[in-house]
Amino acid sequence: MNLRNLIFTSIFISILISFGKAQNVSQPNVLLIITDDQGYGDLRINGNPHIQTPVIDQFAKESIRFNKFYVSPVCAPTRSSLMTGRFSLRTGVRDTYNGGATMAPEEITIAEMLKNVGYSTGIFGKWHLGDNYPSRPNDQGFDESVIHLSGGMGQVGDFTTWFQGDSSYFNPVLWHNGMQEKYDGYCTDIFAQQAIKFIENNKEKPFFCYLAFNAPHTPLQVPDEYYQKYKNIDPASGFENDERPFVKMSEQNKEDARKVYAMVENIDDNLAKIFKMLDELRIEKNTIVIFMTDNGPQQIRYVAGMRGRKGSVYRGGVRVPFYLRYPAVFEGDKDIETTTAHIDILPTLAEICGAEIPKDRIIDGKSLLPLINNRRVDWASRPLFFYWTRRYPELYNNISIQEENMKLVGHTDYNADIQNFELFDIEKDPYEQTNLITKEADVAKNLKTKLDEIYQELIHSENILHPPIPVIGTKNENPVVLNRNDADGERGIWSQEEIYGKWHVKILEGNYNIRFKFIKTVKGGGKMTLEAGPVIHQKINITDTDLIEMHNVHFTETEGELIPFYSVAGKNILPFWVEIERIN
Image (cartoon, rainbow, N blue to C red):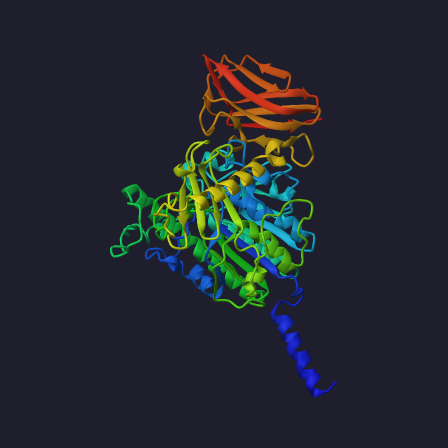
């Protein structure tokens, strides 16, 4: 070997070593970080003078910044679109509770896609796409999972933390690979620690780590050392000469903002530990790191002057930060102004990581790789659809379509005239203050026609017409616990006692033990009734208790509604959760 070849070979080997000794540089690691209810304005880099986020700010400066990146107005729809590259209604996700936050098991997730090409996969934090088989993370492509249930810790669906009340974010019982496990510490710290452990254990092969923090979602609980940094600030100050439109903050809004900012700084500190670990393992250059959030802020606070917040189809509810860094291949510190969205992440990762996009279904997203490589795309003017109402989309209520710089918004009746809509040019009017509906009626009508087409297509999706349901009686999950987050029936089932609720399930034939847990002790002398399809089981001779049991209940195979209620003193009380265990 001559000297020139020897030098070239030495340099090439050094490069490979710098990427990680055993890693295939054609398959980068993927670390996807998403936070919960952190708005566009909850970062210092986006003009918030009060919050301290030095790590994320520096990461953003080193990254490719997608400045017109959009998500759904609320969390479960965003997460289903993120995981599948599809509008959420195609996946069966239509709500955040009310039985509408379960993704169809037939969906192909990023985890499944990357696992098929040799990736190890892990999720740490919030899933919110199904708490029972076959829609749990470990049923949907994740090798390792440490999660809470439903939409958030301390919420009714997450029954292992609900009863902790004001301390539900501390020392929680979480779900490790589908089994309950006790953890010590603050939830954000725990999820970050578990992600670090996963990355360390899989550093020798490509991995996909989905770090889905539940902060700064309510309840706004944070270690006191972080709160003390913000307890004396005025979150509404510092904008005296700012001409952007800001919503007036109440004293409660200000206190909420202080807690949120403290929670976000804690996230920032945990990301510092993760980024340092990537560097120490010498895999930082060959790791794609994405930072994003799932929707706008829940409470009123700084959102860079944009209109609306979580739940709204205005920009404050759906525009979020999105930063992507991949030092081995992409030049950082770059802005991309093309409109992009959560549906684009799966096709982007597929192209970069050498995975195959599902060919047997509609993929609404587009790969962002051409934009990253400074190439023009033919989809830059595609329409994006946004909506949010409980249970199912309500025609023309909190619904919008955005195409290029024009955006049509409906907050009106199902048969309203076009003049009852709003039309904005978000390039000239990014704060959505000037309604152009009268001046640009033809543009509005054209957008409404497209909105109608997309709406009709999505509400007739297979997974909406035939929604995903838990399967009870398999070896994959036994016992099965049905929680309030997934209860259907009356609108807004939460922690009420006297409310009609039911679960849609498939039960395999067998004998079962069933436990009904109540939020409070129920008075004895009543009757426990369980309806499952055409079969009704009842139990009497009940004393004061918060837990009623039925043993050796036989079910033939059935698919339909499971309706439990306890009748006493003229009241019908819905259990807080129902545990069903197959015994033979």
